[in-house]
Length: 108
Image (tube, rainbow, N blue to C red; front, side, top):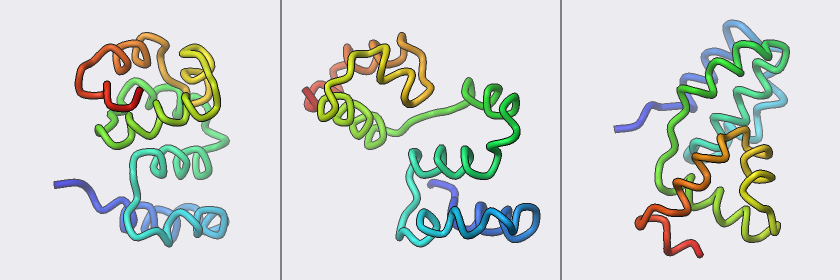
């Protein structure tokens, strides 16, 4: 069971950040909102709250589909682990761990 991110972010934007709703509209119109969409919404909504975003990075979790998308992004753009980690604001160790795990080997 996954949270209804669409409802959560729509309510958040309606109540606290109505000025940012238009920026988020393209993401909120999607049928389902994935982990990468949640990250993007957080960046848009909390762009001025850099410290808050920095703290939240340690609490992120990624489902298999998102990890596969991130690793495919690396292949498509020819990035090394450091560049990929920097782009998605991940730990280099996390990227290495994902690449070494058996369940994600079908990406390579």
